[in-house]
Amino acid sequence: MIDTRATGDTCPECGTATVAPRGALLWCPACEWNLEAYDAERIGPFFGWRWLDRRIHGIGYRMTRRQFDRLRGRPLGSSGVGAAAIVTATASCLLFLGVVALAATGIWLLVAFSFPGPSLLLAVPLLALAIGLRPRFGRLDPDADVLRRDRAPELFTLVDEVAQAVGAPAPDVIAVNADFNAYAATVGIRRRVLCLGLPYWGSLVPQERVALLGHELGHFVNGDPRRMLLTQPAFTTLGSAADLLRPTPLTAPGLIEWMGAALGRIIQYPLSRLLFTLHVALVCVALRDSQRAEYLADEMSAKVAGTAAAKSLLDTALRVESMSLAVRRESRAGHGPQRWQAAVAESREASADELPPLRQLSGREEAPLFSSHPPTGLRHLMLEGVQRHDPAVVLTQQRSSRIDNELTKEYESARRVLAW
Image 1: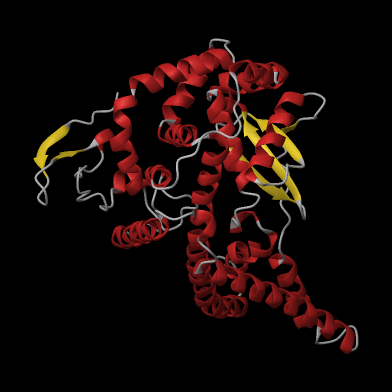
Image 2 (image 1 turned 135 degrees about the vertical axis):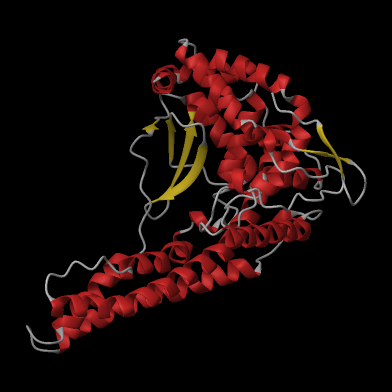
């Protein structure tokens, strides 16, 4: 049980009693005094230096709040292309062209000069670097079980209905696994994948399942840079280059070899650190646009499942640890999704009064500079600030049960994994 009682102190700004759930640093629930504070014990390190971690946390917190204030109160779908999206797309194009230039130069050195020759000493490293930095196509999770339409027609039909309501293309692949999560991704060039973690899916009430599908399918049309092949270089190229240039320990046996390796380190280390710094800065910018896409996916979720269901789904993120424990406990007892839902419902009822402070606390603990998702509490507030929606797709309990019956075999596999 979370203790949300006041610590005995009062806010120096407004005089309201402060709160400190889960042993967090206290803050004021009225004016949010001290909510920005860096709680090293709960947030964890970014780079390992306390002074730098505190500064990074403060920057991330303020950037997250500024973006929330800019987007709140207006339709997210009409927010337009922001500066972060332009920077990410431009950087990705330039980085991709740089990799192409490396490959082209290496090939030119091989073709233009006699083989073998001195040009080989430069051509081979350039080609190896181009291969190492090339964009990668995503791959299907090998631990996921791919479903067929004839095996789960009710689930596929529901996904098709939600996709149509959201205005997104239906996924090419629907898969399930034993994770307490769900995601939408693109593998290959344009192969869209929806993966449902059965412990998570099985513990949700019917309309929350619709909200989950609406959110995940919304990622196919919300411009999320993390799911686009064209913006992949912004997330990977500079980081990969920094890793490739990172100096190795000096192990050369002779003096001349050791001096050569040491000279290489003098060149490699600053160049590797420079590339890593640029990588961190670019990823930070790109993730601002990713957070905007998450807000938009939440709005799509509300349009298809109803605002109440979308907000309820967000609250599950605040309880994910207790929900996971309840599902694992029932799995070890040999129970399936019906008992999962009952156990999770009991946990939710017991913690209903604790949600408001936990939503506020997420504003501190889920606002790192490098987070791809906005804080859950801010996502909840964002839905409160836009037009309220009634559900466009309604999933009845009977239909939800039929979907669970289709997945009996997969549920049993997931239950065994959880039991272990």
